[in-house]
Image 1 (cartoon, rainbow, N blue to C red):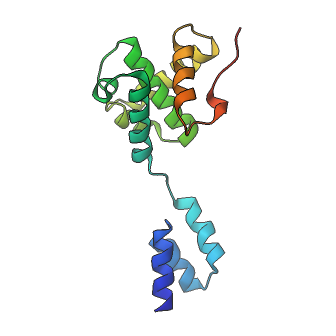
Image 2 (cartoon, rainbow, N blue to C red; image 1 turned 180 degrees about the vertical axis):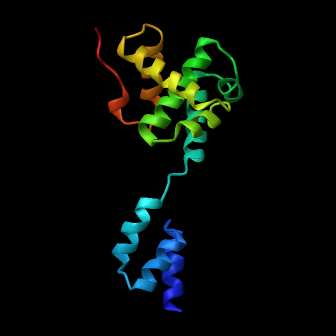
Image 3 (tube, rainbow, N blue to C red; image 1 turned 30 degrees about the vertical axis):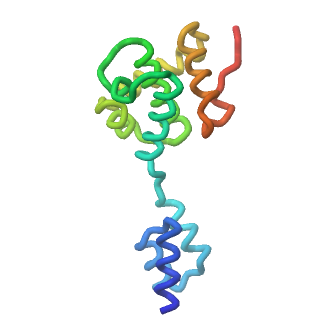
Length: 152
């Protein structure tokens, strides 16, 4: 009974059953279960995306559906660029998943968007950089290192 309670507690903490079973069969200590499971635990990227989309929608005053639509107006494109950049650079989400989240786009479209966003930020684009900085500054979970303050 004690083992079952320990396993239930570990499952609630985010461990995978196969890691827990493997370690208990081999007689591993709890710290070893933690070490093995940390390698396999993936972030819930869907919830990260939903939160990010809601925040960007609120900050930019754009509707969520329009942000992930096929619209090519700059405000919507900039919002998608910003979301893709944060998902990739801060959360390590795969290009394929980012593409699915931001309107069912191909991974090559995401690569193009990320390169364009990086280029617009590093070249101090007069439109995109202030927009991205405003979004980054108003997102509570984004670290300050994303805010670009370099003025050339």
